[in-house]
Amino acid sequence: MLLLSSSKSGIILMVIISLFWFETVRAKDAVPIADYVIKQFGNPPTVPKGPLSKQIQTAIQVAFIESAKQSTWGKDQSAALNKIAMSKDPRIVWIIGDLMRFTSDQQLMFALTDAASKLMGKNLQKSNAWGAVTDHLIAWDIPAPLDYLRVKRAIFTNFVPGWDKIFVEGNIDWRLVSWGGVLIDDRKYNKTDDECNCIPAADNPKVSSAKEASWLKDDDIVFGIEVNGEYRAYPRRIMEVREMVNDTLGGRHLGIPYCTLCGSAQAYFTDRLPNGVERPILRTSGLLIRSNKVMYDINTFSVFDTFRGNAVTGPLAAKNVQLTPASVVTTDWGTWKKAHPETTVLVESLALGRDFDFRNGRDANGPIFPVGDVDPRLLVHEDIIGVITASGKPVAFQRNKAYVALKKGDKVTYENVRLVLDAGGIKAVDMNGSDLGSHQAFWFAWSQFHPQTALWPG
Image (tube, rainbow, N blue to C red):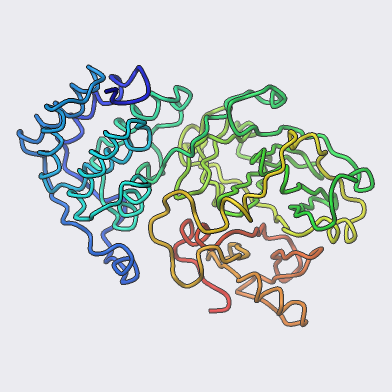
């Protein structure tokens, strides 16, 4: 019986044994677990400190290292995994979870699930066990060993070698990074017409006038952007295929990521950066962090926090690169083109003949990838308008309530932020009317990347 689907599985776990010689640490300061987390996930298991016993180290050698070398899973491996499962050390479950994500053998998956269940003190169902395991680990904030990144890198790059430059030290919690089921888009700039086995970004996309865009229906959802008096619509149908666009509008360079899982189209200016920093060309890595896409710069392989726009690894993180957001208005095509008849719009061919509607289909019932705990102040998929105030405070406005208030003529404000209607959508401006770079997103995503966010109405 094969251990993993890849013939190179022996590489994956060669460094695992060294992982468990280190004292563990929490990625965040120890904070009491919220009542709503305990209600949903139960009390967390006790996390021991210090190295594992020699007996467990030997069991790890047999269960993981030797089985990887032999590409088999037999009685000796099962016995060793049973010993590991009795160790009462839930730190090991992070490694088990990473293996589960790439394991195709059903019997091995069941064995890993049983081991994770014992280590976590939970009776996990064998269907979607990886998701349940990861949700619990995130919600409980179970620490990972100090050498975790090196091991995770070996696991992930065994299957996708293009990730070798992605998995590096930085200001990112690698425990939370998982595989989204697609490969990295590593095509060079202006090569996005080339086919790829990935989510294909678009560089300098072709556009047409509103009159020429007869293929769009008035009720089709578009993401509208304005820069220096120039308007452009990015149809959701295209963005659900491309998920990343590098464009130029109003004389400014833009990187425009769209996370289907988060219901979030964003725009960042990718020019006027510190001296010596070339324009970042953004791509989809194929990785997720709490069900949000992980984007990176193809030139430097620097990873960016998609929701916050700051580089978290690589040369651009070393230079403290922070991208400035531009507002994205989520609305329908008919209202957008009526309000902005001079608008341009991406051409239909960029959809590559596809017509997805993840919002109302695949993602309609909540996140399909692990996210852990979600702030209970709003429903998981509540639409919010998110923005950062002048004081640096993130604030989320419930879209439906803000829209009703604005239509009535009421003011919707928070600190220096004022919401205004724009072509059937909503954007945030300051008291002088200057753009503040807001966007619409699902509550679960905004609240996870801005855990101290204020909420309007409170």
